Image 1 (cartoon, rainbow over the protein chains, first blue to last red):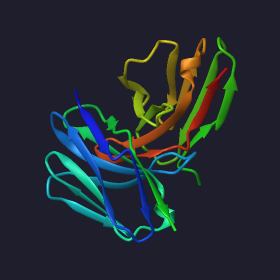
Image 2: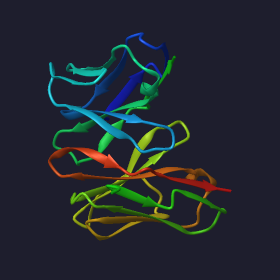
Image 3: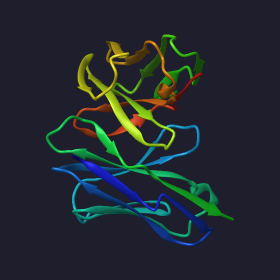
Length: 111
Length: 112
């Protein structure tokens, strides 16, 4: 069964304190790995898609990387506005279009 | 211009009632989805429609019935609501073979 595990469940950082979120996955064949950001009371907002091991993508203070077993979301010098739940999801090759989500990491950045 | 819009945003109802949630997307996408997010924030797919055809139907009680009148709309009807149906329901859309979804802002369903 396709599975996505995110760690830690919650992370509290001071403003400017860089860190990484982890997403490990077990799938029969990876078509794409997605990172989303979800703010309270809102729907997930798309951040990145990664397709193959070694790929990296950046957006402002966020950088996503992918290996054959896991993905990392690196947050450099975070600000309080980066506080949100970060969701990782996989799409399986040869299957339907569905995304299988992890349970998310709730990030809190204190000023 | 909201890309994926859901109505209502909040729905409070009694056990045993029947209710519907509506979803519309103006992105021109050909695939639409319903996801359920439980109290632990875990998102799980329920249904998917591609060009009005049902393509994903996960293990969901048959009290839940999706309907897609056209490829821009996907509604969710729930019969005989139970306490365990309380959750946030998200509609999403995507273009087949173009990666990534766009999500709506969710409908918080509370069954009392």
